[in-house]
Length: 246
Image (cartoon, rainbow, N blue to C red):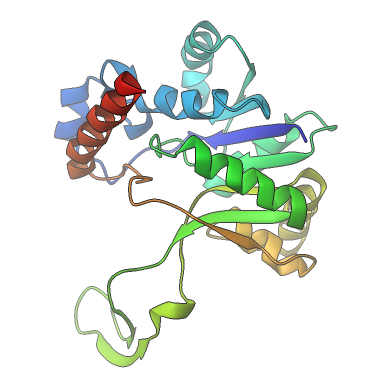
């Protein structure tokens, strides 16, 4: 079953400090340089390595369409690459990306542009689960104790209960769905004015399939804070060393 990948990359990266962005020579986290290449390119390469991926659609800000499109076309030769103008939110960007996907696509995978350390094995497992069940996400079990609180979370919060971790998963990406199911989920969300925190929340509202969970990895980090870049460089060194000994 052929897969299309959508990467929302139109965000402003407000949690990344100005100083760290300037150090990398760019203004947004998806374009910060990791071993000389933008984080976005590292992420795209992971999905380009899958034989099941036919096309990759990247949603960008208007001012980035030309140069990023040129970069991806130059660096990724084995896949169909499309760039589209993203929206003011992740949901809007993914929805615009979905309109650019070929209608005969079987599965659509949505992945954070700033998660460059997703393993190909996990990607393939998510594809397998979605192909069989209609929907699958990557997630990890929390290691910290989770508390339910009331009041302001920044200050003055009060603990109301402790939530069992056995029934909790921290959602990562990719999140993979049948094309027709995801399209229907976005249409329903737009009709109802629903804003979700991820694509799975939109599909869950349809109550048509059970979303499966594929165990992810602690290395599949979302680079959002300046300190994440130090961890990213360490992960890249380990990844490069593994490839060198393979």
